[in-house]
Length: 233
Image 1 (tube, rainbow, N blue to C red):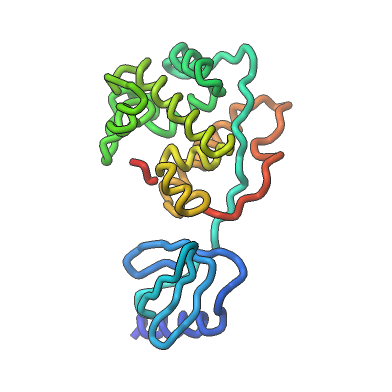
Image 2 (cartoon, rainbow, N blue to C red):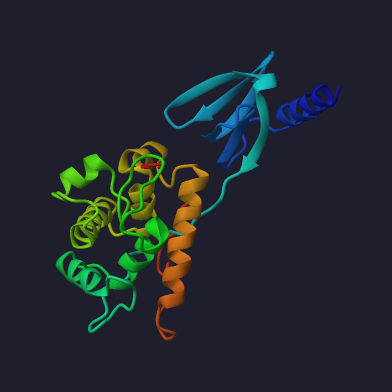
């Protein structure tokens, strides 16, 4: 009875709100979240308008519509001269950051979010080491031993630099690509709607903001607003 009432109430909302002007998420009973530009009721089905097409789902399969989380794009910080990271493996971090023109603090923050500085870390998706490199990513980055801190950090730094270059220095998108994979970022036109990826970006950028000098510009202060939302591992 409760389910019937809930569905009826939601369908009334759907009928009253066809094709909203801003992007949202359709949450299905299965737990799947779909990034949509609009929706409309057609008989006993709901048409979900997505980038690249329309998906039709049964009305009873649609649990709710959620507002989109809006991210402020964060541009990659400029490498400060004379920066000296204090995290574990600081010498490896400093060397890799210099080689790939990255802020050492950025590498430190990514490493903290990825493995909490555990060189033997293995994720449920088989990402390995300090920078949590998938085996295929490690191979592409010429990392022969992903459990070797120096190799793993350099491989992670190289991959992060590739993501920054691919997404024009936008740190938000580069981090999303590092976590979820660049193809997912391209597919969704922004940060993919994965809770793990959203939380990951937040953890890294908040930690990075806390480590920034007090007189520096806030992260993202000069970045244009981005309204779109991996996991790689």
